[in-house]
Length: 73
Image 1 (tube, helix red, strand yellow):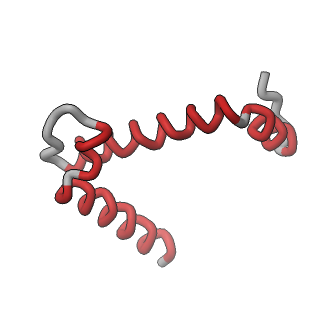
Image 2: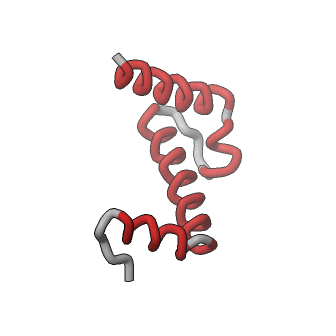
């Protein structure tokens, strides 16, 4: 049930951004006519924010991976 609710919320969020133009304003230079195009713009936004965060917090990420038994070198 939780998975269904999460999927429904994610779908609604991306659909809402598609209809209001929120994703296109910052993350696309073409119209986002399909759900797949909007999803790709959303993934681009998330990737950009993660890489920016990782560049600022590499020590935090490395410590987290080390706590799981992995080496981030």
